[in-house]
Image 1 (cartoon, rainbow, N blue to C red):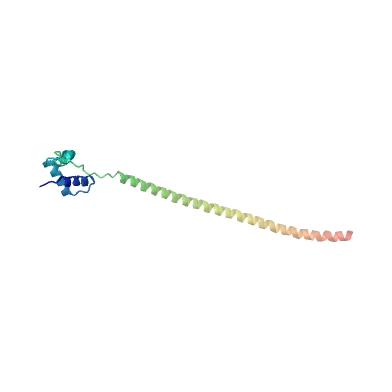
Image 2: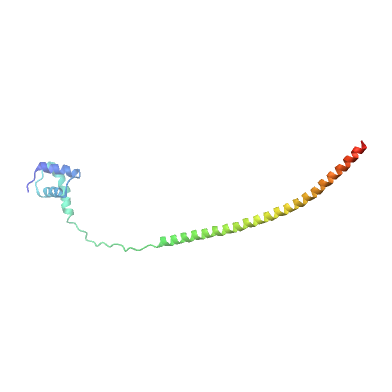
Length: 150
């Protein structure tokens, strides 16, 4: 495989811009690990040499993944929340019924009091009408007497 220094420099510029393909990167890696490198390109030897050696590395330890345990604590919190809302709603419903009963009782008592007041006023009005008749009669008598005296 023959390497052209201008092509290598173009590929390095492309590599810096992250526009190279995998084949072009392998070409660069092969060039920097097998050839005599010009001094102005020696800075890339370690970079591409590292990638060649990094491929060979393997992890010697076994990886153990933790077993997935389901945490049901959130379920208990949700259940308590639902129960609290239920008790709160029931309490509001009971209080509303109690208030409705109290309002109805107050209405009935007020209605009875107003009926009693109305009956008493009607009885008083009847008596006032008797007084009115009495007053008219007395006025007639006094007018007659007043006319005689004059």
